[in-house]
Amino acid sequence: MIKKDFEIGDIDFAKTSDGLIPAVIQDSATLKVLMLGYVNRESLEKTLESGKMTFFSRSRRCLWTKGETSGNFLHVREMFLDCDHDTVLVMAEPAGPVCHKGTVSCFATDESQGFIRELQEVIRRRKEERPEGSYTVRLFDKGTNKIAQKVGEEAVETVIEAVDGNDDAMIYEASDLIYHLLVLLVHKGLSISDLEKELVRRHK
Image 1 (cartoon, rainbow, N blue to C red):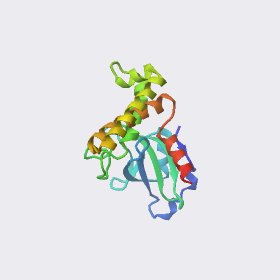
Image 2 (spheres, one colour):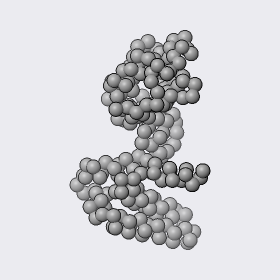
Image 3 (cartoon, rainbow, N blue to C red):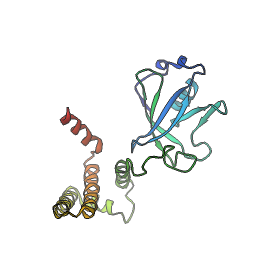
Image 4 (cartoon, rainbow, N blue to C red):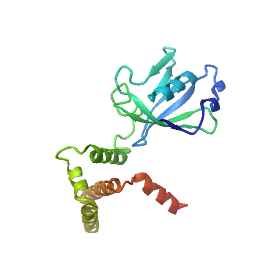
């Protein structure tokens, strides 16, 4: 079920002569902007029906579902309408590279952008799928106390390297800290979004 904050009738397709409006596609996990496409009423209706992002091709003058040839579908999770009612933001889970050049995004952004959220999703899948030999799965099996202990150990090691002025070593230990903190969050049924909400609350 796709979550959305509007009805198709709310969209002002009449603002353009061809009835097309832009759709910005964003990765629902990493928040990376993936691509820009164009949609009309029919393509949006098909998207909502199938759950897969369908655009209107301006060159071929027909509907096309992203991934129908490559298999790299965009599985839509949420949709939002902008304040002028003429642009749609689509939060989607990509099934593979989005760009025809084989890259994650059609925009040449830093590939590491949003990776912490991607890692969180990997950890969540480890908890669900429990692949044999996974260190993450072993942590989940040991429970809250052991995971929390690892967070504490990595925090201490990060502090030690920071005080000693070893920046590279600090980054290494801080990465371990973030990973184990993500494991703890997922183990407790929480996420980065919960941290963000709390930080926003404090900021306000």
